[in-house]
Length: 205
Length: 205
DNA sequence: GATTGATTCCATCAAACGTTTGAAACGTTA
DNA sequence: TAACGTTTCAAACGTTTGATGGAATCAATC
View 1 (cartoon, rainbow over the protein chains, first blue to last red):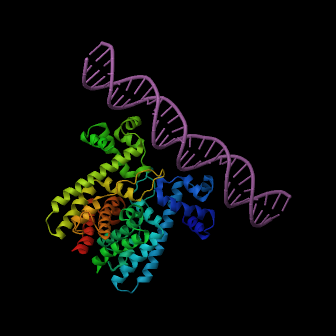
View 2 (tube, helix red, strand yellow):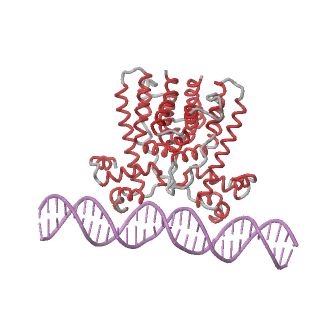
View 3 (cartoon, rainbow over the protein chains, first blue to last red):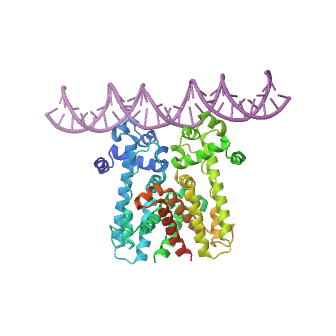
C-alpha cells in the first residue's frame, strides 16, 4: 500500500499520480461521503473504471490520500524545525506559525482532510481511524514544552493540538469566515496569522 | 419554516419533534452526505415516508436542524452573559469557557454541525451557507473587545472566532484526541478546559 | 356510526451510487 | 510480426439513495 503510493508519486505525470492529486483536492472539498468516484474520474477526465483499475475501491484511494497528506505535513514540519533551530522561543513561534500557515493556505485540502478526519464518523465503521498524528509530540518538544521527545506531558500535547487546530480552522474556514469579515484573501491570511500570534506569543513568552 | 420549527419544539413528544431530535444527532455524527433519510427514520422507528410527510426533503430537515442548533447556542450565550455580567475580566473568561465547554460537551452535535458547516462544500451547490453566526460580535462586546456592539473591529472578531473554534475542536475531536491522550472522559474535559484557559487567560489579562 | 382530516405505512420509482466485466488500443520485447 | 503486459474505455451489474402515490389507520366531530 505504502509502496504503491510512493511509486505513484515518483512520476507525477503517471495516471495513478494524477488520480491521487485530483482525489486529494476533491476529497478535501467535499469529504468522503460528499465525494463520488465519478467526480474524481471526471476531474482527471478518465473513465471510472480506469480509476478503479489503478486504485481499487474508494476507501483505498481515500486512505492513500490521507497518507499522502500526512506525509506532506511531516515533511513540512521537519523543514520548519530546521529553520527555527537555535533561535529564541518567541522567534521560533513566530516563524513556525508563519511557515505552517503559508503552507496550509497553499494546500487547504490538508486542513480540510485533517479536520474531516477528526470529526466525521463513517457509516461503514471502516478503518479510517488509523495514523494518529505522531508529530504532535515532536512539535511539543521543538517548542521546549518537553525535555524528552519520547515522553511529552499530556498538557503539552493538548496545547500543541490546540495550536495546530487553530491554524487548520482559519484555513478550512476561509470560505465561511472571510466574507463575514469582508476581507480579501491576503488581508484574511494576515489577520489569521496575527490572531494566531496574539494567542501564542502571549501564552508562551 | 421558522414557525414550523417552533411548533415542532413546543411538544417534544410530537412526531415532528422526535424526528428533529434524531436528525440533529445523526446529522451531527455523520454530516449531511453521510446521513441518509433512512438512518433517521430507523432511529425514530418510523417509515421513511412518515419522515417526508413531516419535513419534506432532506435539505429542509437539515436546515431546520441547523437553525435549531444555532438557536440553542444563542440562548446559551445569553444565559452565560447574564452570569458573568459585572465581574472582572479574568473571572468572566474563566466562567464563560467553563460554561460553554460544559454545554457543548453535553451537546456535541452542536460542535460537529458547526464545524461541518464551516468546512464542508455541498455537491448540489445548494443554499446551506445561510445564517452566519451573528453572535460573534456580541461575544466580542461582552469580552470588552469592542466599545460598540454594532461596530466590532475585525481583529476582535477573529479572536472570538478563534476561541469558539478551539472549544468546538476539543468537543468534536474527543473521539480522536482522547485515545491518543489515554484519558477518561472527565480527565479529557478538564484538560481541554485548562488548555483553553491557558491560552485565553494569558492573552487577555 | 358515518364523515372527515390528519397521520402512518407499504410498495414503488427513477436516479445516482460503487464496482466489475470484457474487450479494445497501446507500447514493448522476442 | 507475433506475443506480451499495461492502460483505457464502453457498458452494465446490483444496491442504495432521495422521494412519491395510494391505501390503511386513527381520532375527533357530527
